[in-house]
Length: 408
Image (cartoon, rainbow, N blue to C red):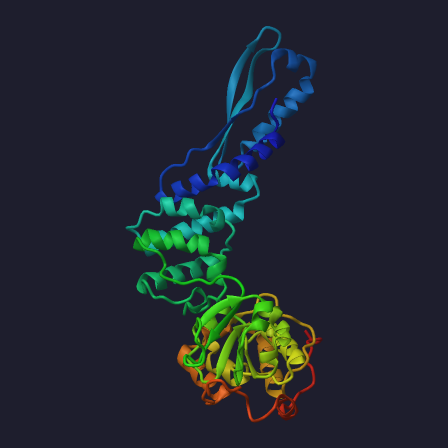
């Protein structure tokens, strides 16, 4: 006799194997094959030996069959000793019921909402194969992701072959990392609509370096190296622009006497091990969020001459439409920030916002970056340095007290 608990375990295993096909059928609006399982009802001998157990087993299946999307089929047995007995023989479940039994109701609900959105947005597109391909990533989305997915797909359809970096998508309410987290859903669905790839670019891994003065370096203008290789580079720029996010490095404008380096988030303080970076004026540009300021503080602790750019209250206010909620803000104390940076941090924490650097329009960013590094032409074969040395820069920076968030 197979029990209800036995079926729950079987349903969970079956879901893992079959749900992509079920979601594909859902997208094509065709009936999906239900999950069917024989129950192996008791024999006459088993019923005679343990009549209470057999009766409880049948009652459990009767109750289970009352669940939505579940059908229990009964069969009549004619036994010499017990006469005619009607017993549960097979259970059949619709995919939505299997999802519920397997603890995947949320994933199925998100999938239904996604399919409904796709049908309304692109009624003439056959999404079955694409949804089946994206199924394992699709069920991990939240219901809040569905309208974001629709907006991203709409933008990609309207801007084929844009050549933008993935984190540059100018879609309101969609943070820069959203595409990377949901690429496995977006790409097949976009291809189903357009018949083409998304046209977006993506990055590799490492300390990405970009020479922003095209006449200052005879080698490749953009490359990725490890820390030891970074130390060994024969560079003497006046300015080093450290960017929190990789996409920002790749989209920077040309700037005299400047080398850009991807700080790789919390790895950025290790750049203090690089002599030519220590000798340069360091400008840091990171996300306007709590972690961006935490990284900035750690960089300035290692490189005291560091100044920030586009990390102030005026930048936040100018581009607030692109700000999104910060999911898990850092609540701790952050040191080594200037008064202006502390003001921006307080504004962010007031509403738990984040404004990622890629969301700032390129033209606005270019103007601020140009002002931050000034104009210092390269002189071939000569060190390019600021007239103000690192110690003077550090003294001129007005530091405010570290700010925590104990009130929240």
